[in-house]
Image (cartoon, rainbow, N blue to C red; front, side, top):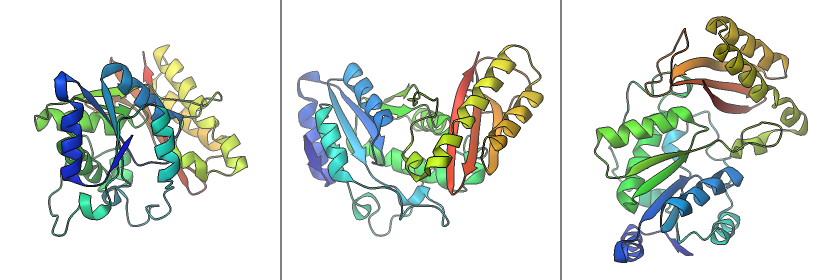
Length: 279
């Protein structure tokens, strides 16, 4: 597996991978890889001839009170895992390469980024959209794969790619979960033993709410019960629990297809997100 940190070298390497009409899948990450990330890599290997993974902890998507400096980093471990999965190339630029001096352009997907995590983390999705747009231009892959765990992010990236005419297909990969239902996340590493045990209340409450809504329960009542169950399970606060149109992210007061139950909650210093389809 090649490890590349220079854009000119990256483009030459990707061009070589594409020789003979071969296709390339991009899996953008911030490192601290777990089985959820590796499931994206495996999807990439199924849909393309070669997989390129990026590791870049993007400072522009972290707020001033968030955990950029503390975000887990272990490139050597990550690289070993990716090599085992047959990844062709690891793109691992530093901040100066990604944001050279004088960088002053950003991408905003206004409506989709205003609510939910966008409201709780102002500027976050501008940082995400900007770095993903740069990754698309740098790697020039045929397809990019993102996890469905951050459904709002996936919707924003799909809209950005459509609006800006990126010649790339965007695929969503199903959420990878532990056997107890908790979605895999790099931030799970921040949880204490007791918090980790309590965190299972989060997906359990969402599953119950999704089933209730699908069965005809009043949406507001089902969402309120999910919030109370999450707090009763040991969480400190709820950022949001909402039923949303799966494409536009419009909040829904009654079920219509396609719909998604979106949620974010805080336990200790850790903020977890999750979502479920409601059918």
